Length: 264
Image 1 (cartoon, rainbow, N blue to C red):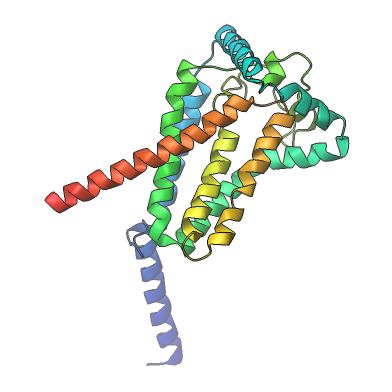
Image 2: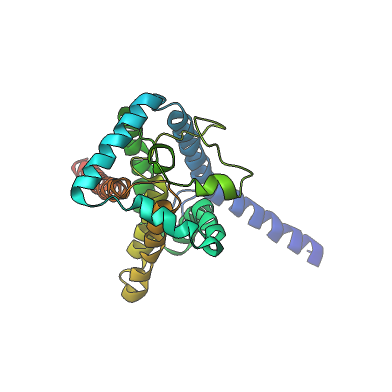
């Protein structure tokens, strides 16, 4: 057999292996890459569609926002206006805040890929947690539409509208498939919390100190959504509750699945 034939044979085997792994194979308990990507895209598209059509009642969203503001005043948590004013007084930080607010999707994708490639043993659990968050938050968006501070709190400047990376942020209403009246809970903070949780869960055994650093990311997002006028303090608290409930649901689901397999 010639060298060219040997090379061609090895290339053929490599292509066959890659195709098998991408479509149907499992490595270390991870789903096949293409199947996983297709499934996640389907979930995200379905979530985006349902999110866009949820909570369109502007009057209800405004009333809920005013009620939330009253609760925050009673609890002395009404810091949104002061936080927003602080950012307007420090214009050099505005663009940084906008980048942080807009580019967090890259962090979600990066964490998913990193856990999939480097920490296959925990990937299924953290991915299920992400999907659980998407599923559990939709009823809240439908039942509790909420105007963000930039719409419902007098004096708050809509920072993103004036400095958006995406060519302009809708000031009101539902445009370009976005539901702008779903402030409760904050999914910017929620997904940032998920990123921190996934990194912490993957690293907690091997690098416990490094694992703790992952929580800096949602702390930064918390500050950003407050100073840009996009969320209330209680929206952020709602995000933490959402993550905690999602983790609990996934844990219970995992135990039930293991019990059924053991019984079968």
